[in-house]
Structures are given as structure tokens and as C-alpha cells.
Amino acid sequence: MNGTTPRRRGRPPRTEAAGTRDRILTAAREEFSARGYEKTSVRGIAKAAGVDPALVHHYFGSKEQVFEAAVEVAFAPALNASDAVADGPPDGVGERLTRFVLGVWENPATRTPLLAIVRSAVNNDTAAAVFRRLIAAQLMRRIAAPLDLPDAELRAELAAAQLVGTAMLRYVIRLEPLASADLEQLVARLAPVVQHHLTAA
Amino acid sequence: MNGTTPRRRGRPPRTEAAGTRDRILTAAREEFSARGYEKTSVRGIAKAAGVDPALVHHYFGSKEQVFEAAVEVAFAPALNASDAVADGPPDGVGERLTRFVLGVWENPATRTPLLAIVRSAVNNDTAAAVFRRLIAAQLMRRIAAPLDLPDAELRAELAAAQLVGTAMLRYVIRLEPLASADLEQLVARLAPVVQHHLTAA
Image (cartoon, rainbow over all chains, first blue to last red):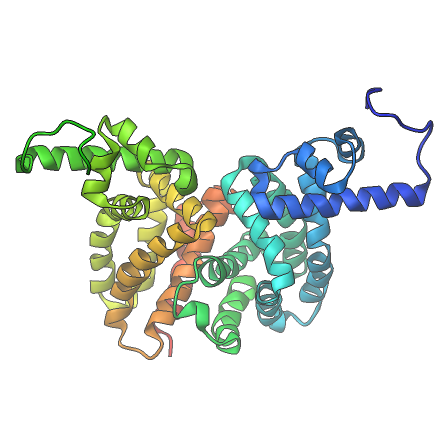
């Protein structure tokens, strides 16, 4: 924040600051979704939000930190739902996790930002690191914690791998017959495998 | 092929043509690996191969067709090996397929072009279509054919999804503890699941 942009003295009032921060986050999500991590710039996000680039740096820091904040907001509902996945009866965790992951991908509103995150993470090491921190530290540990088994984290990741791979081939590559397979047929085939990874002796 | 580049009359001798074609293919693989599908141009491939762009069009056609030829060459050893995966005893197909896929990813020489293909397919619909044609039509059908079960192709794709997802999280996103897990430990956990997808009643 140097003096090139005229600003009032002191902090903006709380509600105005929250509004600006949200506007930047929304613009960031749209820019990262449309262009991917590498082609998105702090300047472009600022322009889309109608603010000075210095304000983006002020609220979030670097481009990586804006990305992390945008991904965190996009994932917040999923992380809340993951508590319900982890906390129910252990013998149904495979089906709950399968329905949860496929449900996020079936819904176009959540599929689009998720696809942007996956594309960024596959193409850019910085975006991959954000993906690791959020998914690994939060989603995987929540799933693994109640299992109370040796190798619980590896088990959770191999269960996730089945679902990540299914999502890749069905929604991204659109391989047939998987891309057109009935959702309940997929749940019936996948849930026992996910359950096996998570809880089999 | 218009007359802007001086050429001898008639076809070049077979050996010379094969040498030029191979040089273009090698350059194409390197360009696609380094830049991804979208940023690679026929002009750039021609430059790297030291030939006129018209010659790239002459041998391969469009950029999509050069990509398909480059991917096909990169996958040829894998497709040959997949016969051995499909043709052995049915009760070992899960372990053979698991070792085969993880082996391709463990080897840096095959991991690099594969990573380039995956990145291109995730980011570009044309590259995804090439991936579908080669992987679906060839690899998946070879695995599915000897199973002789209803839904054999869907089964093969869900088995592949387990291995694709594992490769994504282990080699691309590098999620721990999966990224550092012992290969034999992974085979022990994955082979029964892959076998289940392929042959369980």
C-alpha cells in the first residue's frame, strides 16, 4: 500500500471492508475458474472487482494466498458436509463418502469451481500445494480421524483416489460407458470399495 | 503443401521419409510435454524438428492428429504390455493391472510423457478426445474383453479409476502419506480392489 491511490485515513468501516473483501473473493473465484491459476493475475482480479490491485494485496497478500482463500470459500460447504460423512455410523461411511463426492460433481454449481481447482492443481505446483493443504489437512483427516485404525490416513487417501479417479474419467475425460452410467449403479459399485479401503481388516 | 519451400520432385526415398517422420514425432512429443496441448503449435514442432511446417501437415495433418500420433507412440509399449495384463490367469488380473499402471508411473522415462498427456487432457477438450479414443478404445477394451461379464467395460473403467486417482494423488498432487508410501504396500491394498471391480459377482 503506497500512496499512489487516494484513500481515506484509517481503516474503512467493518461492513464496507467485508463487502470489498467479498467482492475481491468473488472476482478471484471467477478469474481462477475462467483462466486457471497460471493465467490469472492479481491485477486482473482487481480489475474484475473494480478495486486497486494494492487492495487485493492488502486483504490477501500474494496471488497464492488469494487462490487459497478463494478455494477455501468454494470448499467450505463441502468441509462442513464432510463432518456428517465422518460422524455417521462407521459401516455406512463408504456410501456416505461416495454419495457426497459424486454429489458435488453432479451439481453444475459446485462442479465448475472444482474443475477449475483440479485443472490448476494438475498444471501448477503452487496450486497443487494449496490443494494438498486444504484437502489433505482438512478433508482427509476428518474422514480418517474416527476410523482409529493403523494407516487411517493412507486408507482415506486410497478411498479418495477411487472417487477422484472416477470423477476424472466421468466428468473431465468423459470416458464411456462411465460418463453416462446411472448414478445409483455407480454408488452400488463404488460404496463397498470405498468402505473396504476405510474399514476392512 | 504449396510451392513456397523448394522440394525435389516425387516422394522422398522410404528411409529418408521415415527419418523425417520420426524426427517430427520426437519433436512433437517434446513440445507437447514441455508446453501442453494448447500452447504447442505445428510451427513450433516444425521448428524444433528443423523442417518446414508444411511437412508436418503433409505427414500428420492437423495439430490434433500430430498429438494423437505422438500419444500413440508414447503409449505403444504400454498397449503391448496390456496384452500380457489381459491374457494371464483371471484371478491375478487385479495385481497385474495394478503393477503395470504403478510401474509406468514409477519410471521417470514413462512418467514425464504420461504427465504431459494427463495435463493436456484435463485442460483441453480436443486432447481429452484423443485420450478417450486411445485409452478407451484400446486399453480398456483389451482389459474388458477376456472378462466376459455384463458391464465388463464399466468394470474396467472403475478399476482404472482407482489407479488413475491413485496416480493423480501420489505423483501429480503428491499428497502425503500416499506420495511416500511403499510400492508393495500400495499393491497389497490396491490389487484386491482392482480385482473386485474386474471379476467379483
